[in-house]
Amino acid sequence: MLIIAGLGNPGGKYAGNRHNIGFMAVDAIHRRHGFSPWSKKFRAEIAEGELAGKKVLLIKPQTFMNLSGEAVGEAMRFYKLQPTDLVAIYDELDLPQGKARLKTGGGHGGHNGIKSLDAHCGKEYRRLRLGIGHPGVKEMVQNHVLGDFAKADRVWLEPLLETLADNADMLVRNEDSQLMNKIALALGGKAEEEKPRKDSEKKPAGQSHIRQARNNNQPKLPTTGPMAEMLKKMFGKGD
Image (cartoon, rainbow, N blue to C red; front, side, top):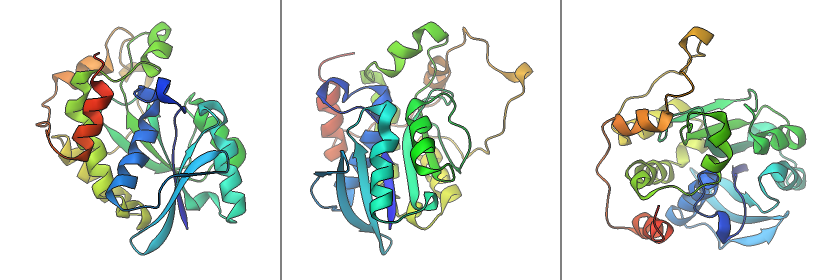
């Protein structure tokens, strides 16, 4: 069995937050692949299904972000799984919006949900980070991550989630680089190998990841389908 855990905060108040892109991703997978209805177990919402011939459990912890590992760890112990049987999907400030990176292990990068997963699940699980951009200054980070996606973000958010859902079977087959290529191409770019930046190469605090991403060529936004309807509802209340 593989567990795919999307991280976020429960409740309608947080549903459209950038911090909840992990929830949005597993919801997209759930709709696309005919998983069971969501049910409550392990202090989480869970759904069972199959991808690439393997049993998969989707999980959305309902413990709030900072305690995500408690719920996921409980599920892993119940099914007697190892860290290698877990994929976590979550938001990444230090990636421009629409970018994605997938790797096994690593640090938590200050992400409280990942700190909790590391503490309760071990560290050698696969981490799918979905970029939400950085507001540019530290003081704005909390409002940024706990703020809703803007209507303009649909241009990259919808194709990102659609492509991930379409190719979720690649997560099961460990086709990580192929999945990253699919996502990059869907967002109008090409796959890039992630390299650690030297201090001298780091972006000045005043230069926004969001501004950089919006200056790039953007894919045409689809206007029909379940994902389009979901995002229309999400952004209907405005920016």
